[in-house]
Image 1 (cartoon, rainbow, N blue to C red):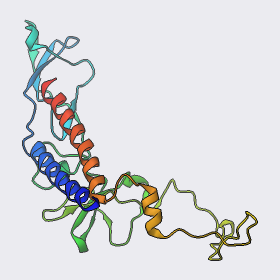
Image 2 (cartoon, rainbow, N blue to C red; image 1 turned 90 degrees about the horizontal axis):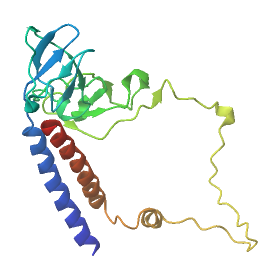
Image 3 (cartoon, helix red, strand yellow; image 1 turned 135 degrees about the horizontal axis):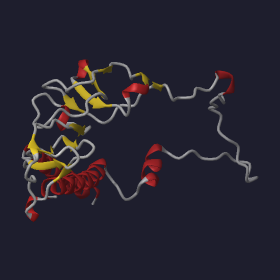
Image 4 (cartoon, rainbow, N blue to C red; image 1 turned 120 degrees about the horizontal axis):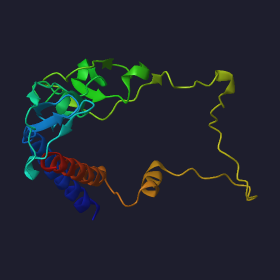
Length: 228
């Protein structure tokens, strides 16, 4: 039973990986939309976003509803508008040669020896990285692979505890406080793993479930972006 669940988990993980790849690969910029600023009596046409970011309209600007027949009012001038973008911090948008606008890649770190890339939560407060990792802050180089988020070993928000206040780690077994006179048995690692999560008999099932949730979020967000 355990083996069958593992195989099923690996199969689902593979399918989700393919689906997510095509969801990103087939993403395209949204159709251009007209915008208007009634205060300055100006109109413009902009691309409202793509798979790597959304446009932030400047103050006073709003979209015209072409489906409802709205258009630039007579007497308004047409200008070129270059609004700012809210960029996405996702792997696809921080790969060399990716489609879409430049992503939010300031938190990208790399490990040259293993040809790996990852994100940290906030590079601005990260004062030290695990051995082999270095701050990169731009697109992941071609040929590198993405791994899970890397945690800073030290950050500016970390409050250190003086050595004198640290409790010493004891290897002496704790005495039984029940009065039986024996010692408390230490569970074996396998027992701890099974007790921790009996519903997930192998990592592949956990990966499949996590991938299913991620796929749903991405595909739903993509649908809302392209059809709203």
